[in-house]
Amino acid sequence: MTKRIGILTGGGDAPGLNAVIRAFVKHSVREYQWEVIGIEDSFNGLFDSPRRLQKLDLRSCQGLLHRGGTVLGTTNRGNPFSFPMPDGSKADRSAELVNAIREEGIDGLVCIGGDGTQAIAIRLMEECGVPVVGVPKTIDNDLSATDFTFGFQSAVDVATEALDRLHTTAESHERVMFLEVMGRDAGHIAISAGVSGGADVILIPEIPYDPVRVANKIRGRQQLGRLFSIVVVAEGALPIGSGSLTKAERKKRIHRGGGAAAVAMAQLDGRIEAEMRSCVLGHLQRGGSPVAFDRLLATRF
Image (cartoon, rainbow, N blue to C red; front, side):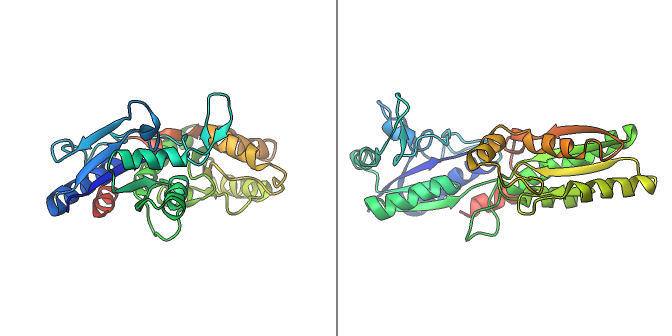
């Protein structure tokens, strides 16, 4: 029996999203003769009038393997269980979503996304009876029950290349260079890129750092004649004693980026005698073509 399956991408973009879409469509059409319907901008495509849906076939998936971003569009706004309304309030529109799924004749959903998207998918399955398959996605590599998420290695490669470039300018000017990378509350990108790129100090969210120890490390290098240093800072990293920072403040700082490196530099100001500069990679880690590892991993879904 032919099935009609909806597929969507939610949350932040990551290299490899299109590769997953391509792999699913090709396998569904060739092996099962299923019809695949792309839902635009996460769940939002089912709420809009007219609904924003697109039929995906073998032709529409040509050229997607190496293409960054997502052809379906994505957003982290539009939780059907807490949907943002024009007046600023939040409303439970899950019943509307389920009704739209039924009206479109969709037999099940494939939800490609991170913890937020997967949390919604679980509720749709458990509370609303919608058949769902979740595909883990995040450059942060911080989802449970999976060793690697596609997009992570691409982000690490971007950060590692940035460190290679920062080394030459840091050494030329005898500066301490801070590279802020993504990762939210996880330090996987910082550690992987920091080790691969030869960073001298790596600051991660899981371990609050001691500015005195960081300063001692840099001064120790200076005493050995190494007059430059490279510090990798995960966006969620905080110094010891920052427990008073509220969850909302942490989320705001991480969302905008640029806070962690600035805080680290301020903590070292007056503790070291060196010129300091910072570089925030930001969304460069999300954009562009996926590396070979992420293409392979995404295709296996």
